[in-house]
Image 1 (tube, helix red, strand yellow):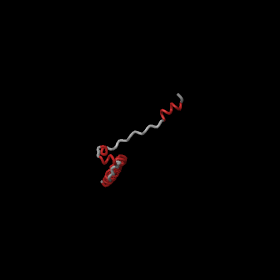
Image 2 (cartoon, helix red, strand yellow; image 1 turned 120 degrees about the horizontal axis):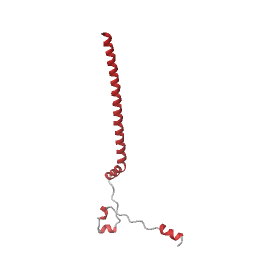
Image 3 (cartoon, rainbow, N blue to C red; image 1 turned 30 degrees about the vertical axis):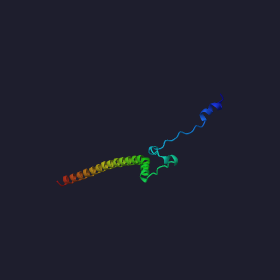
Image 4 (spheres, rainbow, N blue to C red; image 1 turned 90 degrees about the vertical axis):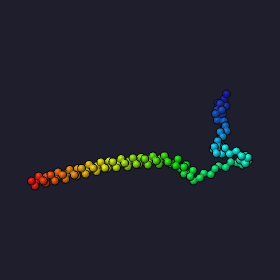
Length: 105
């Protein structure tokens, strides 16, 4: 057996497998459908929206969830820093008032 004969086994063109029709078109069996070619059902705008949602829904929801998590984390960090700053200011004012009271006594 020659190399070209061996390779022709793997490179020979075979017909592509037949695609199955959607379930709704397979169940339609009438005499008119045998003579006319089947038309693809027209997709409604609602079905197109569902297709868009399936395509972009997961990435958009992932970005939304990560951004919400980031926002809440930054908000918690900011509120912690702000409360620490307010506590320091309050303690400083208290020390000043105590010092003034001791001076007046």
